[in-house]
Length: 253
Image 1 (cartoon, rainbow, N blue to C red):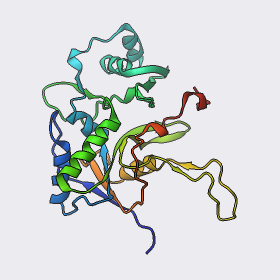
Image 2: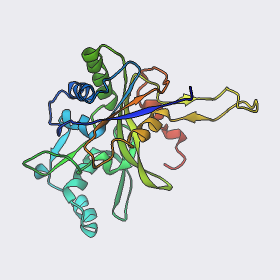
Image 3: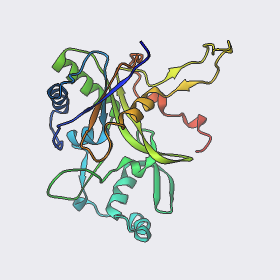
Image 4: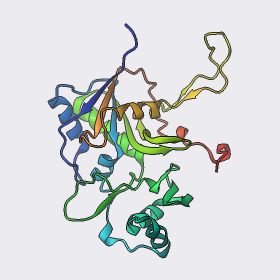
């Protein structure tokens, strides 16, 4: 049989509220639509629903913008409260120009607005933004363990978010948290089809899986998770850390 990977969107979930049992909801929804989770699946869950379930939500009515946030927001008609939250979530400001705020988060991610997101929050009674999970790998492990407890099979869990990309237009889904699979596939030391030894090729498997999942979990269809079935990933527990480029290797810092 030719190599085949199947993407299955998990539909039918309501808006997630803080404190809800996200793993049980995902398991039940997958079963209800006739595609129950199976051993060796990769469960890709969008960051927003993970963060909402964990209570990583900020009511903007509680935020007093700093003068820095006010000055940056004003020329670009941005909400200074959102800018303030992004600044508070940042470990380092990478670039702050032309209405674009690029930061390094405490997780080591380089992204716009520290990953703070005001879209599709779906909570009544206020003006909210959603933050990245405190520890996305720990979030992925909790989901993986809870799924195992529910259905008795081992799956890998990947938490995805949408990041912009330097030098290319358009955003893409990337992995921000991981449990049960190795994030990189290292070809170094192997031979290509001409017999040459590969010296530099390391493939970002976790990001490729995350990007593929967006084909069924796009922004407008209320599909917050996907099952990736049939990909022979390498089991592992290194989390997302191997994908974060070390400071001394970053030529653009």
